[in-house]
Image (cartoon, rainbow, N blue to C red; front, side, top):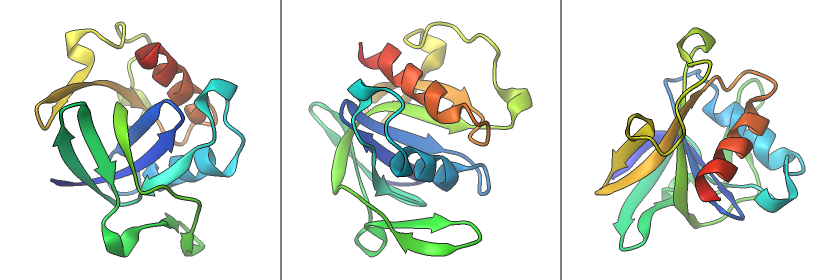
Length: 150
């Protein structure tokens, strides 16, 4: 299955960034891979795929990888499509739905609650809504990953 999304790999697992065109998927991915990790346990972030992500169900969860034509490429608005550090695939641990700030709940329930899960290819994954363009978005994403991965 191929989805319109961006995926970033961390030391603890992959993060699938979903959202409409212009919602900040590539921008957030760029900030994650271009800086030291917000927390040491997260490890360095690498791009898996930008714009389109191929998802495959496995016994262990949902595997993400880049379509061959897009591997290692990130669209940087105002600059163009550029090569960046990347990895071939990862196991997804968290799904982030990128939305306008007004649609992001101020205090969502615990990330493992049923309303905070999304179903992909037979697997339930923790899901959180964030605004990608906030300066704190990488930190919020890292904290959500920590909460879901223990």
